[in-house]
Amino acid sequence: MRWAIAPSLTITVFLLPVVAGLIGTLLPSFGYLPAIGSEHLSLAPWRTLIEQPGVLTSVRLSLQTGVLATLLSLAIAAGFCALADDSPLYQRLSALVSPMLATPHVAVAIGLAFLIAPSGWLLRLVSPTLTGWDRPPGDLVTVRDSQGLAMVLGLLLKEVPYLILMITAALHQVPHRALRRVGAALGYRTAAAWFKLVFPLVHAQLRLPVYAVLAFSLSTVEVGLILAPGNPPPLALLAARWFADYDLQRYFPAAAAAVLQGLLVLGALAVWRIAEWCVARAGRAWCERGRRGGAIVPIASASAALGALGLVLGIGALVGMAVWSFALDWRFPELVPQSFTLASWARQGPRVADTVWTTASLALASAAVAVALAIACLESETRRGRTPTHRALWLLYLPLLLPQIAFLYGFQVLLVRFELDGAWLAVAWAHLVFVLPYAFLSLADPWRALDPRYARSAAALGASPLAVLWQVRLPLLLKPVLLAFAVGCAVSVGQYLSTLFAGAGRVATLTTEAVTLSSGADPRVMGVYAILQALIPLVVYAAAHLLPKLRYARRQGMA
Image (cartoon, rainbow, N blue to C red):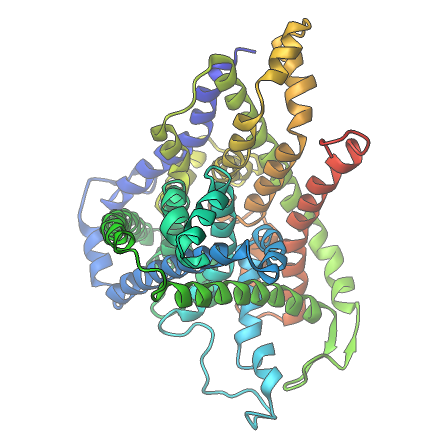
C-alpha cells in the first residue's frame, strides 16, 4: 500500500460530502434546483424566509440557547477539572464521564424530559409532601419552555462531560501538577493556581473542541425536537421541518434557512474568537495583579458542584428511562412503580430487532472504516516524519464546525444524482463524515506519544515497516485503537439528521425512532428505545476496556 495517499484518500472520503453538500444547499437557497424545474437564480427563498412569522424569534432562540450552553459548559467543565485532582469526591464522579459520553444526545434528552416534566421524577421526590400536588400541575412548563432553558440543560448534560474529557487530555500535554505546586508555594489556593497557571496553557488546545460545542449547540435538531419550544422553534429545527414538508416548494426557503444557520454559526465563532482575545487581555492583567484569593475560588467551587450535579442528573435520566421500560403502572406522585414487568420489552422485541441490527451495523462499519483511515493517515505521518499543521486540524474539524443542516440536504441531492439515496451504504458514508474526526482525534495523541525506539528496535532486528505496524505498533496501541473505535460507534449511534437525509426516511435507526416516539408515545416504549440506544455504545466501550486486559493479562504494562 502506498501510505502517502492515505491522507488524500481520507480527505476525499469525508470532505466530498461537505463541499458538495454546501454547494447543493447554497444554490437552492437562491432558487436554483433543476431537479424540480427551477433553473433561474432568485431571491424569493430569502423573502419567504424573512416574511415567515416568528423567524427573528427562531434566530434569537438559536443564538440564546447555543451561546448560553457553550459558556456554561466551558465554565462548569473548567471548574470541575480545577478541583478534581484534590477532591476524592470529584475523582469518583469523574468515572461517570465515560458513560455520559457514550450515551447519545437523544437518549439523554428523552431521559431529562422525564426527570424535569411536570409528572417527572424531580417533582415526584417532593410531592405531595412539599408541593401538595397529588396530580401533575397543568400550568407548569418545564419542557419545551419558551426560553429554551430545558434545551440548554439537555446540552449541558452532554457537552460538560465532553469538555471534561478534552481538558483532561490537554492536561497530559502540560506540567499541570508542577505548576500547581508552584502556585501553592506562592500562596495561591488550588482553584486560583489552576486558573492562573494551568488553564491558559490548556485553553490553546481546547479552542477547536469548544468551537465544535458552540457549532453543535447553535444548530442541533435532535435535541431541539425533544426539549426546545415548537412554535416558533430554533432556526435549524425550522429548516429541518421545511425540508421534511411534502410541498417541494418549501425546499427553497428551507435551504435559505439552512444557509442562514451556517452564517449564524460562522458569526458566533468570529465573535467568540474576539471575546477570547478580550478575556485573554483581561486575564493577563488579573494574573499580574497577584491577588491570592478573589471571586475565582467560590466561582470555581460552584462550577465544580454544578458539574458534579450534572453528571449525577445525566445518570439519573438514564436510570429513569430504564425504570419506565420495566414499569407496569406508574402513577403520579409515586416515586417508583407499584410493579414491574417485561411486557414492554417482550412487545417491542420483535419490532425493534431489525432497527437494532441496522443501528449496530452502521456504527460498527463506520467506526471500523474511520479507525482504519485514521491508522493509515497516522502511519503515513510516522513514515514520512511529518506532523500535520494546525490548518490540517482545522480541516479535520470542518464537519463539526459547520451546522449539519447547512450541508446534509445538498449531500442528499448528490446521493439522488448517483441513485444512492435511501441505501445503507449512503447512510454509512454520511455517518463516516462525523465519525472520522472523533476517531482520528482520539487516536492521534496516543499514536504520536508512542516511544519511537520500539519501531527502531524492531527494524534493527530485520522487521519490515508493515511488520513493525502489525506486530509492534498496533499491539502496543491496542487500547487506544479500541477506544477510538468505541468513540466512533457512539458518534454513529447518535446520528439523527445524517441518517434522515442520507437514508431518505427509509433507513430507521434507534435514534430516528426514538426522536419520532418522543413526540407523545407511551413512556414505556420510549424507555425501551432510549435504553437500547444507550446500550450499544456502552457495550462497545466496555469491550474496549476489557479486551486489552484479557489479551495481555500476563504482559506487564500492556493490560
